[in-house]
Amino acid sequence: MPAEVTAPAEEVKAEEPAAEEKKPEPEAEAEAVAEPEKPAEEVKAEPVAEEKAEPVPEPKAVEKPAAEEKKSEKPESKQATIEPVDEEGDEVVKPKVVEEEDEVDKMELDQYYPEDHIEKELEDSPISIRNVQFTSALGQNSFKRYNIHFLEDDVIIYCVSNRYQTFNLTTHEYKTYSGTDTDGIGSIAVHPNRKYFAVAEKGDKPSIYIREYPSMKLYRVMRKGTEKIYIHCEFSATGEKLVSLGGSPDYTLTVWNWINQRVILKCKASSQEVFRASFSPYLDMVLCTSGQGHIKFWQMAQTFTGLKLQGDTGKFGQIDLSDVSSFYELPDGKMLCGTEAGTLISWEGVLVKAHLVLDKETKAPLHKGMIEVILYEDKHFITAGSDGYIKWWPLQDIDIAEGDDCQEVAIRPTKEVSISTPEGEFAHIMHMIKGKGMWLIQDALGRLWQLDAKDY
Image (cartoon, rainbow, N blue to C red; front, side, top):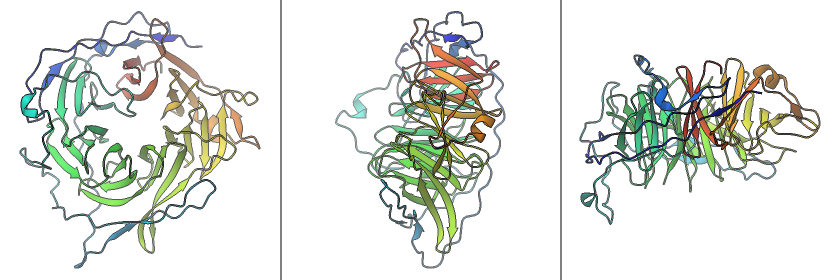
């Protein structure tokens, strides 16, 4: 068994106040994280302060999406529908018509919004902004799934309260930027070429703001995708599309042509809370959503009535219904998802192909608690979760797994590592991203861990 990682919790101290500016460019500094104790023999977890700066790669140009369809002389409403699903325990979702969006001026690829652009007039709060001064925002929303992203090899972006920050892992310099809408930041996503990032906000009819990095200039705005809050957004693997997920009360799933600021398709994702929406890593026309007690498989299909979003809910069958926050598509189209019990489910279509456990007889779970992370690298699936363990599973074992009448199939990890403090407090892993030579791990207990990737 691999040795446990031991590293102290981060300590962040507030710096001297800095006056707030209307333009999103206030700066502040964060103190270095305390030096960790010497790590265990096989695992090297260091605080973020120790990472050396790597050369920043030149951002690649964003690929130009397909040309926008020409409108007829009398515009008609576009339809995006979900085919009714008639299955036990699931309500039948009726087709929903997407109304024609407001006219949006087409912008050239090299065109930006002016610096003095005001997207919407906001009412002043009872405690007027004129009477207060912003000093700093410390920490990050550690319980927010998928909150940390790389903008450069040594620069990350994340949201905190109603602002978002960039943080340099080498210099410990951070910059704070204000949101545009009233109630905070719902989600952040970074384009595959790292030249753009999306900030999906909260408020009355919030918008998604696409900014260029590192200039931070406003590039595009996505409007009318939800009523009150965005809880997740994500670019497709090609970078040509953006998917957004609205929260209560509408839970709207929207696919955007983000460069042209237009909705491609929009519909209700579920009647229950939804955690995540993501494109297939192989096809932009295939998506998956998951959340409270469900996982749903989507396809953008061309029918005789037009382009539609068709969604089918996974049937858990004999397996206990579970919340699902993590999933990943296999190269052959099968889907793998985690459960709150710490097991994995392999899906073929909407049916369970195998229920993966450590022991078939005792049904011992793969993790002790909810699996929050599923990644794929070098012919291995990587899982992590609330028990503080990261484990590697061979693709071949998962791909060929097929359950019998009881559906359970036993698999074993090729390696594993635990993340904990010197006092033995295990991390609650919410998210993992891989940088150059290291893993960055988001801990729901308020810490940010760095794991040397040379051995993992």
